[in-house]
Length: 479
Image 1 (cartoon, rainbow, N blue to C red):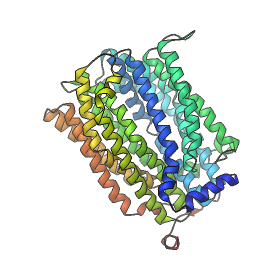
Image 2: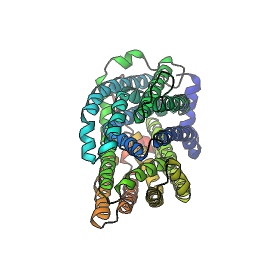
Image 3: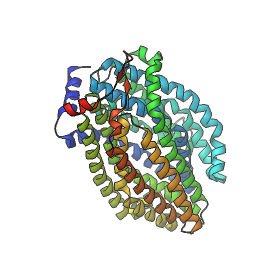
Image 4: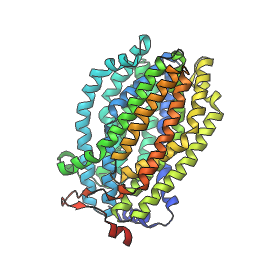
């Protein structure tokens, strides 16, 4: 690690203005998230010219894909926890080992996920109740997207390694290049250009595949080069080091199950909406509303990522009170920003939803507006959940954030949505109310778990000496 990067580490650990530190790490992630959501918007807008069925197919396909892809979060969360902790300790060899094992585990995971996804996509579509043209289009989209899984994983891991070490600018630059390639690829493959035939909905997935491949090459090329915040040795990438690999998975698996709980919940929400009397309008309205809501989520997710990095680094350096304050600051900033954006989207819901519709559809517009208003009311609490959960996850404390999501999303959200939408016949509005109430519950439970401070004392094993390292109460007092 260069002196420049060592100075950055010292700055992040010792600068007294924690608000500045959080924003310093978060602003590139906000832009990065904006670009990612923008690509999703462009995808939906482009395929929207093919009709409402195309919008439903892309939205349905993505939710099924994410149902299978959640295990990327196991590797990512464990990697960030180890990278940030070792960076805080100043143990750069262990940083390289942890990053290398993230690469190795990504390749292994891709080898499992590709055949799993290709063999189960029709079965899952049938469970969702998807039929006719939407079924055909979603199956086509998913088949191509599954082939991009190795590049998706490797790109995501490279980003996580940079962020865990306190560098959020380099991933932003890579994402800018990657997203430009994605837009160009979408245009070429969806509509056809030169020697490339028009692929329709499948073209959106092909554009993503090409962009992820480019992002993987740029990200791992930068990590191996040694010119950035992390230097990864090639031997650490190809040689299994089971002690570190097991730690990554031990820390990350609860986060994977947390993501699985979220995605199963979303999966069931789609199924509930598909069985309401207004299903043909409710499903595309949910896809459009969710896509718009992603913009409100961006600052909360960015604050959460910054909190995870700073939490791990400060605990690694023995600065426990500073780690706790980081979580509080990120939750406060996230709640303000997410709440403000959610209000703006609700206020301008009509033109925003119309943007996605190739033809006027009053029913989709009305249902989508209701979604943005009801969900927007709960977004400040959603920000609290994100920031405090990621603060704990950055410390390697992942069990209780998973349990909170399991209860609030999979049990409470699904039960309330079904009860209100089907039993009490409120239709899509009942689903929106169920989502909002479960979001508030998750925020309350996350705060209670964060406040007990048990997350500050998670043991991490050194990547080279095989020793246990843990902050003690004495270190807490002295720092």
